[in-house]
Amino acid sequence: MRLAYLIKQKSYEKIEHVLRRHPITFIPYVFLFLLIISLPVGVYFMVSAIFPIFLDREGTYVLAILLASAYYLVSYVLFYTQFVEYYLDMWIVTNDRIVDIEQLGLFARSVSELDLFRIQDVTTDVHGFFSTIFHYGDVTVKTASSNVGIVFRNVPNPNKVREDLIRLSHEDRKYHFGG
Image (cartoon, rainbow, N blue to C red; front, top):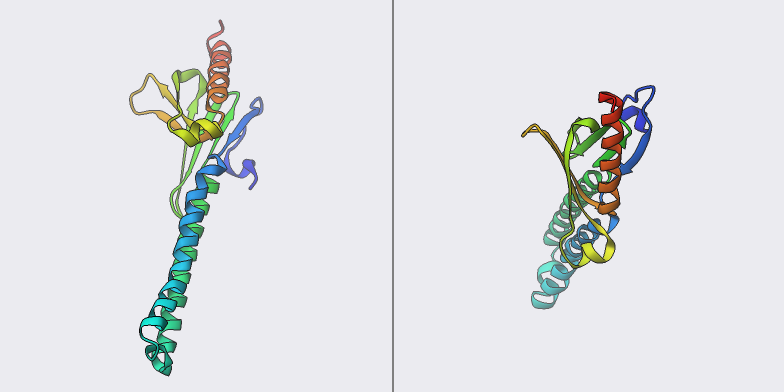
């Protein structure tokens, strides 16, 4: 996906970071998907072991195939939806602003912007064993306004991102306020 499609870059604007969630955060969805798609196989073997005559009838076998196909279709669509939300959620940090692009399901997207010179506070949160080991966490950007704030969820190297945001904020503040 081209970033020019998502944001209209100003002439002096330079992209510093394009952030997405850490790939390790998607692994639980993969394991859940594998568990969900293996469930009908387990049910088939259990039913054929307990009621061996049940699936010998043509009508029940066709119905079982139809139900399993519908189940797999729904499972694939739900997994695909989770993948689209994971992959298309992104934060673009330029030398002038932060663009928060949040994918809400398959057909909805929310885009918000925050000027860097308005940043008052940048906080990182790294909680848990896996977050500490794999170096990912949340970065919260706050402004003086109570309703404007952006949270970068599960981004890699949150402390480096926080330091870069603070540095960029100071540089942008100097540019806008001359000092």
